[in-house]
Image 1 (cartoon, rainbow, N blue to C red):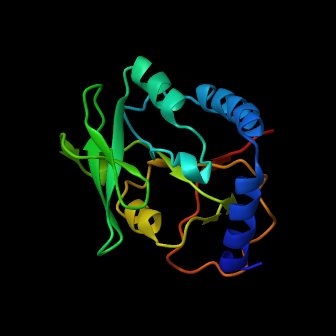
Image 2 (spheres, rainbow, N blue to C red):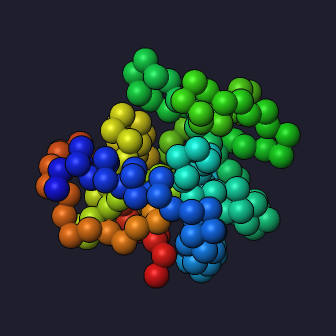
Length: 182
């Protein structure tokens, strides 16, 4: 199937999940994240979950990495050019909802892609080659191009990867790992 079809199908599948199902799926996924080797990691990028879209709740993961003395980075969307600006997320950072329901920092210390060691990425579905289908705006494809070659890209998804996404483009960047419920 192509990205457009997959996007439609997996938005519906995720919307159909009950909050109890999501809680159970998340617990399994959190444990997989806790089992990662993060000894060399200093700066970790997270997406801030959109509850309305039933994305995995990244707040417990952020708390875990913060407790391990890792610096947390989150992004602010620029909808004019589909780019992301990155900020360190501190305990006292002020966040606000943008027009699409995404929590974003309104202040803080700005940082840039080369400092990132590990990036957690939202997605609707991935395939066996670790390509992903997101929401279709290209924010993460542009972002990941600017990251270091040794930075680790990790997708978080409630669904088992499919065999193949048919319409992978040259600008699509595969992930290094996809975490989904086992």
